[in-house]
Length: 352
Ligand code: NAD
Ligand code: DAU
Image 1 (spheres, helix red, strand yellow):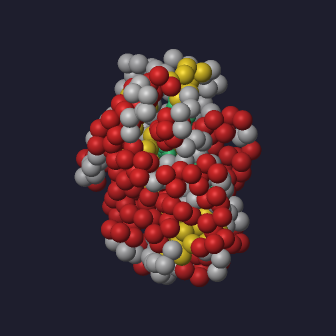
Image 2 (image 1 turned 180 degrees about the horizontal axis):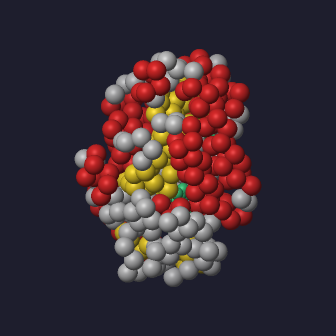
Image 3 (image 1 turned 90 degrees about the vertical axis):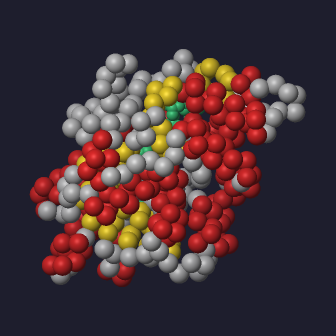
């Protein structure tokens, strides 16, 4: 089996669902269930013996050590993190604690476990660290996309904390020989995305008749990838990535934020037109910019494509349509997130 951390969050939950659907290998899912952890994302697995959910903190070394000793995973995939840039600006403490200190304790527990394995299991073991393109900093309009050798230049407390965790992972390979892999991915979107992030926020605000807040001039560029393509990239890197290597993951899909917001409005105009016949675009509202806002990210994913033969399955057009449809078809998930009722799910469905 494999141990997944942060598997109740947006990408982690998509990964666990896809993992069990594609290969069926059991998953132990360690998640602290912060505000971003939502067991409703995994509701379809509530009676699946292949999924063992454990509420806990990657920073609790003793608990992680017990989990590793009990379940003897052949790999650890680390999604657990504080992930929202705006929250890191308002309160960086949790980001330092989980993303840096937590990753350190997780690595220590994994190193001790790995060190005690027999030689064949040791050789087969993998620690895959899920990271972000934000560690590379911000690009100018004409700059080449980030490659894996781009210098680290994080600009927000979030990206600085992820950069620190990447460095720890790298150091554990070089110093102790821990068999690590790191992926640095661009902006994800898709089902189960918490509506504090741009795309789901625009969808749920539009449907609720609320303003669609666009930071600054809306011309910041992000490189968007459908979440299930990120999950397939992680599976491929876990399967065939070279030890100690870093793989950038991206969809070659750079777009300014305002174009993203307009695309969401266009789809909603088509799929759920407003009662007054006006476009959802009339709800767009330019607001104060994010402090230190990175202007542009772009991922060069050639290493992953050429070395490991990975390719995204979705274009932005197909992925954003699936995403908007998913939100329209899951009003209860949205309502539970908005009212906070999703936090009761653990009590009612996972009491044992
Ligand atoms: P998320 O915020 O939706 O989910 C994070 C999950 O981690 C939650 O379930 C939360 O409860 C859990 N968690 C937080 N602190 C924990 C701790 N101390 N111990 C155990 N669990 C803890 O985040 P996401 O968007 O799914 O991102 C997952 C990972 O992917 C993160 O490492 C993030 O940096 C990285 N990433 C995200 C994106 C993106 O666009 N969302 C892009 C590239 C990389
Ligand atoms: O690049 C990968 C990163 O993408 C991940 O590492 C992060 O975990 C993930 O949250 C995401 O970070 P961003 O800051 O790019 O995502 P966010 O959805 O918060 O914002 C996307 C862009 O939209 C960004 O330029 C800020 C802007 N924005 C965001 C919100 C929430 C708005 O204009 N209005 C908004 O209300």
